[in-house]
Amino acid sequence: MEGEVVINDGTNKPASMDSLLQWSQWQLIDSILPTGGFAHSFGLEAAIQARLVSGPEGLRTYVIQVLENTGSLLLPFVYSASISPDMQTWHKLDKMLDATLTNEVGRKASIAQGSALMRVAAAVFQEVPNLKTLRDTSLSTGAVCFHHAPIFGLICGLLGSDVQTSQRAYMFMIMRDVISAATRLNLVGPLGAAVLQHQVAVVAEDLSKKWMDRAVEEACQTMPLLDTVQGCHGYLFSRLFCS
Image 1 (cartoon, rainbow, N blue to C red):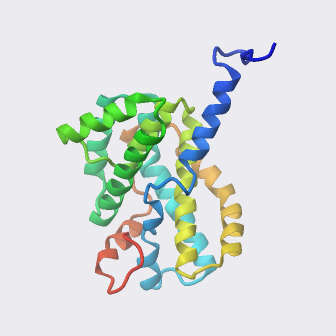
Image 2 (cartoon, helix red, strand yellow; image 1 turned 90 degrees about the horizontal axis):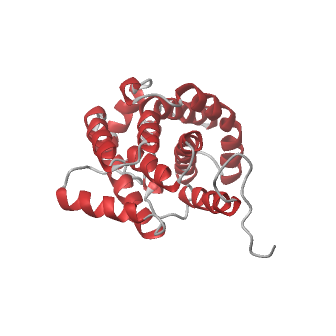
């Protein structure tokens, strides 16, 4: 019948709702969403000036190391927030991550991106009024720093994304932003960047599976050199990125 909503087999969710969820998921990781991710190089700019990265092969290694560190350190926060998207859990995770991040440059970058993401999500995803309520309440109390990873998981959970998709999406965003930064730093051209992203996707999937669905108590640094390099970004004489 015209206008009839088809129900998926084995679920209680209308097929049309599943389709709308996919549109929201795509928008959440779309580069046009103004969350400030492209203002950060995740330490790549400092690594280039320190001559730790000097060509396409070095870039590939760096991107993989960033993904490894993201999976081990930040995916647990995305996962925990997405399976329990409420204010109490979010505030707890935010405080834990604030205490876990060891370099001030990375910490400020996480807060800047998280604050922007929460503001944008509250304005865009108006079908989830809890987002605006959570943001307004937290701003008024000053109870959280608005770190990026827990907020991303919180939004995914409130939108109804499954936890595996949420974690893969987070890894994709980090990979995309680092490679985009490499393009603007003239380390690789746009076509080369697209080829690199496609090649690294295989590794990113393996790393996602490796670190997926872990509790925050298991969060750890696997690439401490990256943390050190990013911490040096503020000492650069000239720089294009914020971190």
